[in-house]
Length: 157
Image (tube, rainbow, N blue to C red):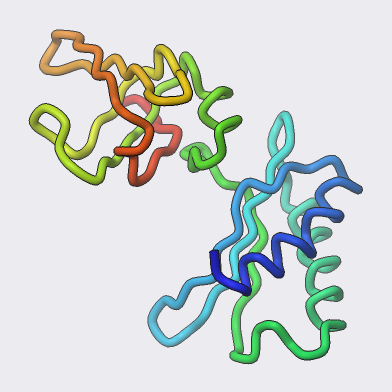
């Protein structure tokens, strides 16, 4: 984890606790010529724009007060909902997703692919069982958690 992400995570956690929001993710990335500090937040029932603005204002104040500045380059601060296809990163994210339709990207192929979408049927500390529709036939893949590069909720079409 980068120093910027660690610093921002530590700063935003008390804000999350105070407002009873959940910190989903923090990322600091360069896109094109600009740097973006993105903070994804949520709460049961979903987060709204006013709540995002509230967290943005409070976090911005705290970042401005730090000396030395932990982010010396110019950047854009974005506070938002993780959206309908929220990432699954923490163990509790996966636990909440049992029974839901998810997208999983793998480091290496399992079966014929490195990417699967299906229903998360079962979860253990070592693996997840994903029920996938392959051309009208359902197959359950046992995917080691260590093989997962990225996972997120998915919208079923």
